[in-house]
Amino acid sequence: EVQLVESGGGLVQAGGSLRLSCAASGFTFDTYDIGWFRQAPGKEHEGVSCIYGSDGSTSYADSVKGRFTISSDNAKNTVYLQMNNLKPEDTAVYYCTAVHIRRGLNVLMTMTYVGGDGMDYCGKGTLVTVSS
Image 1 (cartoon, helix red, strand yellow):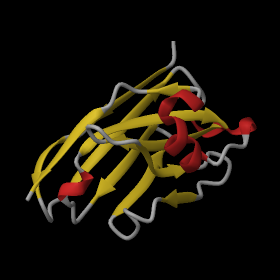
Image 2 (spheres, rainbow, N blue to C red; image 1 turned 90 degrees about the vertical axis):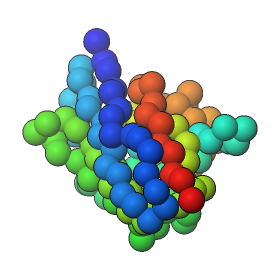
Image 3 (cartoon, rainbow, N blue to C red; image 1 turned 135 degrees about the vertical axis):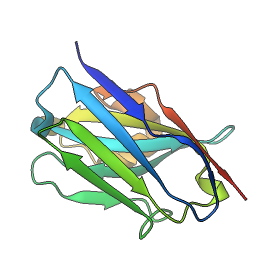
Image 4 (spheres, rainbow, N blue to C red; image 1 turned 45 degrees about the vertical axis):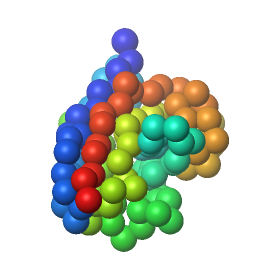
């Protein structure tokens, strides 16, 4: 059974940091592109970051560039999202998603348009709240 389990969310003050984790099971990690998207109450999905399984390249939304860093530990089948200098507008539920590399998707764009529905797998999310 394929599972993506997010953890690491919580309440933090503006300017603080959090590290989200996405633990994957049931599939070969390096044959998947892994992404994070977020959804704030009443707002649309926003693709935040992704890491491509074929070569480890990464991509970020303009809103988080320079503040967020995505990384993976293939031995642990875990992807991390290090979030620094958090802002109140980063408050959202953060979801981890995975899509097989053969689909060749633009992962950030796909997650922005359709959230987890366009991906092969999606976790249940972890809430990040940033207070001002």
